Amino acid sequence: MEMNDEEMMNFAHGETGRTGGEEEINGGKREDVDYDRFISCLQIHGHAKYSPIAVLELLPAVCRDHHGLLFCRKVVSTQILFYFVLEDFVFYWGHRILHTKWLYKHVHSVHHEYATPFGLTSEYAHPAEILFLGFATIVGPAITGPHLITLCADFHDYHHRLLYTKSGNYSSTFVYMDWIFGTDKGYRKLKALKSDGDEDTYRRREPLPVVSSWLHRPSYRRYQRHAIVEELAGLGAAVHTCARNKDELEKCLRGWEDEGLGITGSVCDVSSQADREKLLDSVSSIFNQKLNILINNVGTNIRKPMVDFTSEEVSMLMGTNFQSAFHMCQLAYPLLKASGAGSVVFTSSVSGFVSLKYMSVHGASKGAINQLTKNLACEWARDGIRVNAVAPWYIKTSMVEQVLSNKEYLEEVFDRTPMRRLGDPTEVSSVVAFLCLPASSFITGQIVCVDGGMSVNGFYPSQS
Image 1: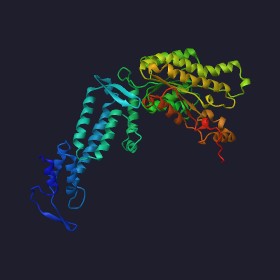
Image 2: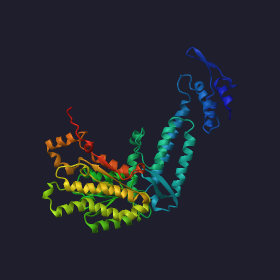
Image 3: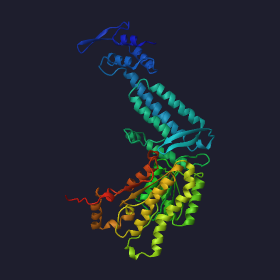
Image 4: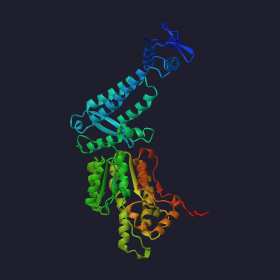
């Protein structure tokens, strides 16, 4: 049945030619409405046959039944039921089932890409999966869209974003839907399955950072370097990390594997030139001679007056804090350049900006890192490589527990920090991740202080 806009307007005012009685409602009268005909018109409207104005004009005439409730309860409830069955369980979870370890062992002849926070992820998918996604994309909106104009728009957008991005981690009104539908848990399980697959059958072309870190003891969530690894891996990057302690490294890797994070690692003492060269050879092989992100997060410190330092201690501090990062950049440069969009992030310190007690050599090494950041940013810009650094103040990790166990000293730290608290490892890792994202694609040569305002606090007494 087809009607033009004028016929639809006549219908809204009861001029439809339909024979039917009238009924009393709240002391007034209204003409009986041909609901079947209206639904047919509305379905046709879903295919853009009629203007939205005509449909909106119809609503006052048909949005009442003899109980004064919303119109077409049976139709609307049926549509909602079909919507959730079709979209949530068939299309969405069917897509998850197709994306299994079993599927990737078979012929993969169709190439497609997914959007991730870092850019496009390239995969080779089974043709059945592509057909399934096409069916979900075309049939889903065609069936459910016309009758749930407002409600469907939100839910449909959310679930189809999940289909294409494979992630439900949106900072929006949909955050509670992740909990309801279990999308975050399902996504992590999916990543765990894929991380166990053969590299020849499942290959990702997303950013692949190297994180240089040393592990000394358990509770890896309390380390800034582990927070960086987890932050990047949680955003979809394939991370390769290193550590001197094999046992602790393996323990961390097992924990990350249980969480479904795609993290690999190798034993390496980054203060050793031979180990650095071996590490980059392995990274080049793992990531096909391309590297998107390099995180130089290694460092150590000795606190004592400057005149008490030996030449060996100075060499050790400068070699670990500066020379290792310098050499890692030299080795990684060809891989970063080959990626076409490389990003280097150094871990500096506020000691590279301001004077701290018994930190003369540490401050000198971090000051050198700050200047290297600026120089490389200009030198490598033509190669599409950005270079930045983060400079933390006291962060709540196991490394500073002993230093801050003195309450009087801790109070002095708070007095020098306008925000009057310690930083959290995730507050550093989030900045590092931002500097690696396309969102910061025009930022280079910057040293971002993550210090609660400490480095800019000249004289700002708490007591006015």
